[in-house]
Image (cartoon, rainbow, N blue to C red):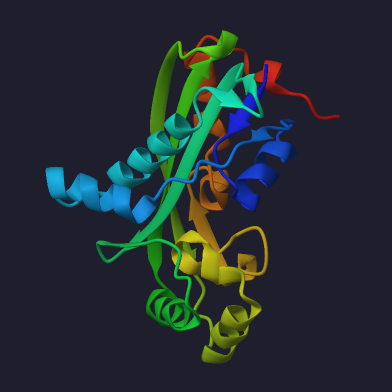
Length: 211
């Protein structure tokens, strides 16, 4: 069974590989800010869970059909993540100044990383159904110094990740506690994904294709 990953996230790809799965990476090219604005214009402000689920679904749906001229035959996974603290949703900071400000505000405190998952059954080249679920993990940060924040921001790592932090790289030592599935903080909850796979009637181990 093939798994198609509708994401270019290196962290999600590394997670799946570590779990024995070599997915087919299919970029979705979803305009995320525009999609969120459109949804909020219709329904009002989105909760973190609703936002990541919306974007996960749109990413998966965007790649339905063919890939490299061949029908997609397998499962399509869309995922999205966002960090929330003080009732504010923090996506990717992109800019060093934004990342620095966020770290100074969140050090020594606890926030929540929300990860959305949408899985489409696209076996035999057609859509046969879909399931989705969100996962959340609480993250407590160390009381890092200004110098540590400046060095971390200068590394570039926090600029393109939700919440301006990672747990599996340079940011790991700045996190003191995680409650929930740890893989949620990396980019997708493996335990949640396994549950979705099984809900579609597929054995999790049938996705293993790495030695």
